[in-house]
Image 1 (cartoon, rainbow, N blue to C red):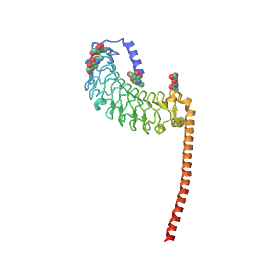
Image 2: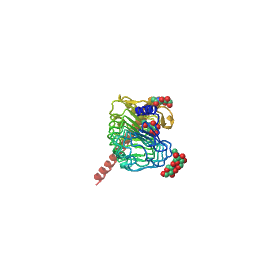
Image 3: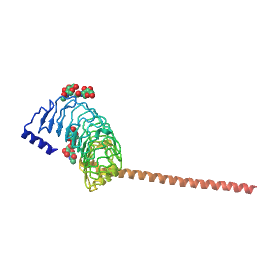
Image 4: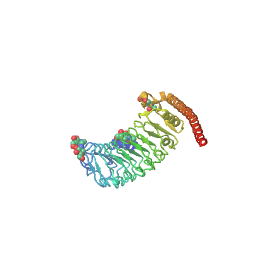
Length: 355
Ligand SMILES: *[C@@H]1O[C@H](CO)[C@@H](O)[C@H](O)[C@H]1NC(C)=O
Ligand SMILES: *[C@@H]1O[C@H](CO)[C@@H](O)[C@H](O)[C@H]1NC(C)=O
Ligand SMILES: *[C@@H]1O[C@H](CO)[C@@H](O)[C@H](O)[C@H]1NC(C)=O
Ligand SMILES: *[C@@H]1O[C@H](CO)[C@@H](O)[C@H](O)[C@H]1NC(C)=O
């Protein structure tokens, strides 16, 4: 991308922006027509006269509302397509078919709420897909079917509340998955299956309170797991233990931790695993119990299990006393019963003799 921008600047300087009559009004076609800049041109529909040799088409900040099938069939050389900041709510099946050279597609800041199965048809070389700030609610296995080469997927700031099993299964090249600022509440086992190249998994700013054991297991290349700003109050040790990577940094700040001996123990165990780095451990703070609210976990962790030990001691003593008391009572009763039996026997004997 960097090199592309440099190229753009270079070519702009060299060929001095050839505003061509071949170019749509409102667009600025440069670099011998290889760059069509149509940003902020007030388009409500896709312009029709984009030169077919265009490699970069910038349609950001317009008023497009939908993308019809095969909209870019005359622009098969496109490598970068920028559609951010429009008002696109519908992307029809096959909208991007025949774009076999496209490497970057930016659809962020639009109003897309559904991705259909045909959305990714023809995008088999796409490396970067930007979909942040849309209105996506649910991801399933049909959303990203044909993105075999994708390396970066940005889904931040949508309203995603559910990710179904194998939603990202076609993307074995994916390196970065940005899901921050969505509405996820739980991470179910299987939703990240097949993401064996994934290095960055950003889940910050969701409402995640549970992580199912094994959910991170397929992520064998993960170097950064960001879970900051979620609703975790406890931690499922096994789901973190199953991270089998060379080294992974984990961020957990901004969660409502329930600071008790259990939590302290789990964190102690996690911190002793050499491949895991809890970078912001020193910044974790307690939400509950109320007496510990706002305390940093680090400052109270030495006492959490002391209190627990005292409690255990008190309970043990109480139980012991109860048991002892019960035994004493039992013994007394037994003695009484024996006495009672003795009298009964005497009575019966007396009766027999009297007869
Ligand atoms: C898009 O349309 C809205 C009203 O429909 C208008 O206020 C806005 O200026 C338009 N934006 C652009 C970039 O043309
Ligand atoms: C976006 O599109 C919807 C209809 O799809 C329209 O009601 C709304 O005014 C548009 N917004 C802007 C800013 O153009
Ligand atoms: C994701 O999208 C947001 C909003 O457009 C942007 O600010 C952020 O830089 C993007 N992140 C990545 C890694 O592309
Ligand atoms: C901890 O919090 C402080 C203040 O908010 C911040 O400056 C620092 O970067 C945080 N440390 C880590 C490791 O996140």
